Image (cartoon, rainbow, N blue to C red):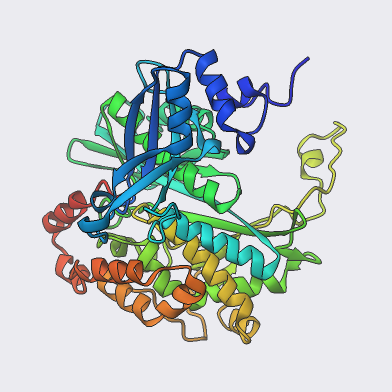
Length: 497
C-alpha cells in the first residue's frame, strides 16, 4: 500500500515517512546510518547573501549526535563584515527540517541549513535569518494572521551560440525546445531542487532571448508554492545553489543579475504574498480584495522606496527599474497590471468550470476549494538579501494594517492599464534611481523597520553605508549610449548574491 509520502521527491521524507518540518535529530541519525551517508555539510547564509559551507566526515554515532546537537564554532567577523574581530566567535546550529541529500556529491552526503547563535547561546541579532524570524513572530502575534510567501526566480543562461532553431529576440516567453535550448537544464533543476525539499509550482522559459557577438543569452524562471516565509527563503537559497552547480557541470554561465544589457528583459525576483486565518486564505472577502489585504498593500507602497535597500542592492538593479518595460518604476498597484509595483494576479475567482468547457462531453466536477489569490511585489531582483527583503515586506504589511489612512491610500494609488502609456491622473512617486538614493530613502524611513526591535540599528547602518559606497547616483546618465562601459558594469555584478 502506497503511503502519503511515496511520491515526495525528497529522499529523507520517503525514507522517514514524515514531513520535513517534523524531522528530529534521531530521524537524521537513523537516515545517515541506514543509507551509509559519509559526509555532513553545514550550510548557512553570511552577510554577503551567499551560501557558506562547513564539511564534516562522519566517524560514528556519537560523533554525528554531537554535531547535530551542539553545532560548531565559526568566525563571525569573516562572515559578517559589521562584526568586530575582538568578540566574533559564533555557533552554527543545524535546523533539522532543512536536511537534504546533496545531488552533486561524489560520496553520499547530507546537507543541512544552520542558524547563527552568539557566545551566550542566543540567536544572533544581526543575522538576516533571525531578523526574518522576528518579523514573522511579531506579525503573527500582533495580527493573529499567518503570512505565506513564494518567490519567482528569474535567471539567464549564457553560452556560446550553437545549433539551429534560434529563438526570436525578446520572444522567449514559454518557448519550447528546440527553440529554448536550456529547457532540459531547467527541468533537471526542477527535479533536483524538489529533491532538496523545495515546493515548486512550475518552471518555464521567459521573455529574454538575445545574442551578443558569439554569445547567446536565454532567460528562464522557476516559481515556487506559497509557504511560510522562512522556508520560502530557504528554498530560494538552495535553488540558486542548485542552478549554479548545474551550470558548472554543463560549462555554461548562470546569472541572476537584474540586467544583462540595456534594452533587453531584465531578471526580477518577484514575491507573492497571502494571509491566512485559521488556515483559510483571507486575501479575498466576498469575491473582492479584503480590507486587510488592501491595507497591507498600502503599507508596502508607503515604504516601497526604502524596501529597495534590501531587494535591489547593486548599481545594475537600477538599470532594470526603467520605464516602458515590465519592471516597475512608479509607486502604485493594480489588478493584473504588470507595469504596477504591486500586482493582484488572476486568482481563479470566477464561477465558470473552465475544465468542463475545455473537455466537452466529459464529466469534470469542480469543487470550490481554498482561495489561491495572492498579491505580488514586483520590485526586487536577484541581488536581494532574501531574508531581509522578506522581513521588510512583513514589516511593511504590518505597517499598513496599523496605518489609519491605509484604505484611502490604497484607493489613491490604484491604477488601471499601462502606466507608461495611459498616464494616471494622480501624481505617482518614483522608486529610487540608484543605490545611493535607495540608502537615503531607507534612512528616512528606518524607524518603521527598527520599530519593535525587528531590524537592528547596526544592521541598518551597515546597509545604508554599503549602498552609499557605490556612489552611483548619476550612473544611468553616465552610461547613456556607452555600450562598452555598460557591459563592464554588468560583468562586475554578473554573479550577485
